Image (cartoon, rainbow, N blue to C red; front, side, top):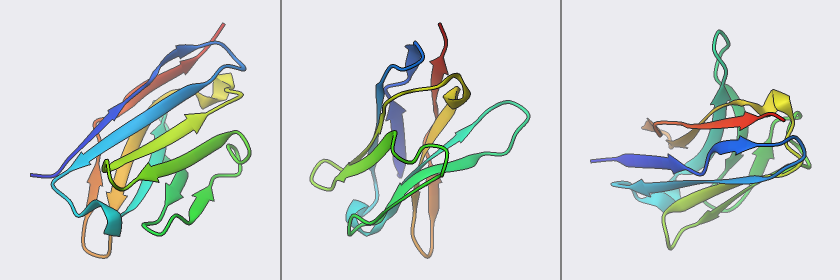
Length: 115
C-alpha cells in the first residue's frame, strides 16, 4: 500500500521559516520524481517545486530563491525548506510522487503565514 505522509505545516509570521516533510512508503522511492504542490480554496492546485531521483530541481517563479526542495533516498523522505515566507504562501501543501505509470498524493498540511 502506497502512503505519503505530509507534515511540518503550521502558523508562522511573515518573514519566518517552516520545513515540510513527506515520508513515503510502498514505492521504490529513488525512481520517483517528488514534488510539492499547494492549493488555496477556489483555486487550482499549483506546482511549488519538484526534484527528480537524480536530484535535479525545478521551482515555481513565485518561490525561487526562498524555498528549497531536497530528498533523502535512504529515508524515503522529501523536504521543503521555506524561508522568507509571505502571506500569499498560505495554502494547503501536498506532497506528490510520480513516474511514467503512477501518481500519488499526500493528505496535505496547512501552512498559514500571518501576523
